[in-house]
Length: 145
Figure (tube, rainbow, N blue to C red):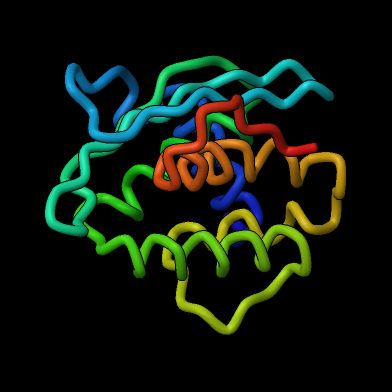
């Protein structure tokens, strides 16, 4: 099995069986996001205490890349400081738009190929933009326009 096939398999797995799927009953931050180009919609629920992401979940529907990105994002940011989350956001955004990053992104590196398909960047970044909007307590719906 090639590395590319392994990455595709991981995206399919997280797309079909997303981790941290559901709502948090009393989140400290919550925001809904929508990609108007393809109809992907999700809501990110985040519980932050003392500058740490204690818990994060999401609900919604979308393509495999959108759901897998949300699933892997929740795994990556849980237990991190807000500064670390912001750094991960920046690194992930660079990864899917340029195709590489100087930051160590672990499993998130599977999305490097998204940069080759600009229309899919919005799918991969929807959860991330929604999370970032939740953390800044924006009240409007996040969009990847």
